[in-house]
Image 1 (cartoon, rainbow, N blue to C red):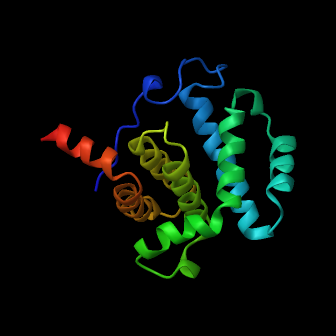
Image 2: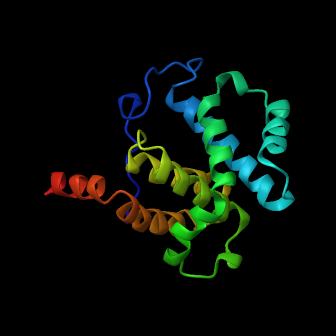
Length: 169
């Protein structure tokens, strides 16, 4: 399993400027904020609306964030958490209760994106999950996340994954 190039603006949204809310950096900030929110939710049990309000009031870079993606990921990952866990839990090498809250939050977000954001290529969803794990997780957490997300992509998007494998042959 290896890290995957996450493509460019053509792969996910358009534009490249830092002020453009659909730029790659704006989407990355949205995922980082959503990760903070899901992490906060896992620890506090607050509603997604409460978590969202808190993050928006504390964020200095909200204007440089893809707000629509942030809200979609945050509310989707929290609202569908049980369903999403059902997707990735069988792929874990350890019990769900033994995941760090960061790994848990990243897997909820990555699974939501694979399952519901079909416009995001599966490779982007995997790579963004890996990058979140590298930035916020434990030393080798990104390897664990990569393994789970690779298996999950093959289950949730089999045609897309097979087409990518066939193109490499």
